[in-house]
Amino acid sequence: MKEQHYQFTVFFEPAEEGGYVVTCPALPGLVTEGDTLDEAREMAKDAILGYIESLQKDGEPIPADKPRRVDPVVEKITVAVPAA
Image (cartoon, rainbow, N blue to C red):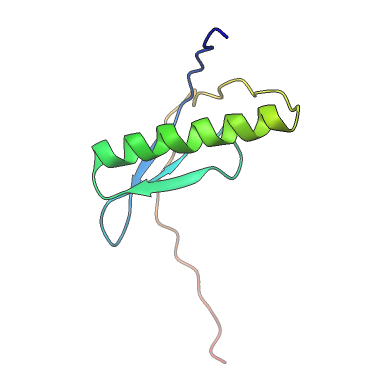
């Protein structure tokens, strides 16, 4: 059987406790992490492979990549919470 190659956009977000949390917009629910960026990349590959294998086992289609078209807007928002 010939291998099929897929490419997905993933996000590596620094975690508060160190390391990186990885998500993939095209694969809902896929979250993994790694202590280093290299480890996070390998964990992402493993998680994506497992996700795709699960889709194939269930006869589901493999989604197309959903690349981010613009940079996110990052800002702090202050809210006032009434005292209890």
